Image 1: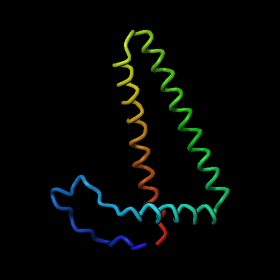
Image 2: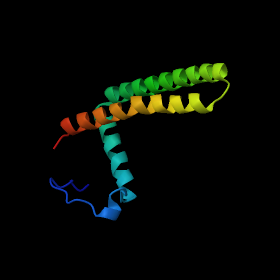
Image 3: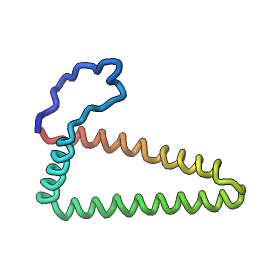
Image 4: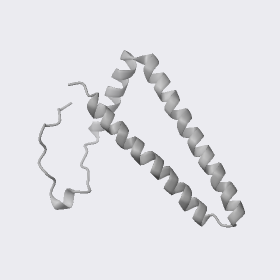
Length: 108
């Protein structure tokens, strides 16, 4: 695994929205995940179960409320768009928080 340089030059204009990741990088991520699992198996399993349960509960409740609202309104377009917006509004800040915590806890 090659380390990321401290200073990264800016991307060219056409590469701003593209990510050029080698297919072998996924194997590096998988290896790191397995290494983490072998070092801390209980923490890894409990974290995975917790994330799974919170995700399932959130999606089920959002879908249930969307179905109730769609039945009352008589259309799925507006409730579906509202459901997607609420889910996006919840997940984006949490993903940014997770990214910030991972940077802070990075092991050199």
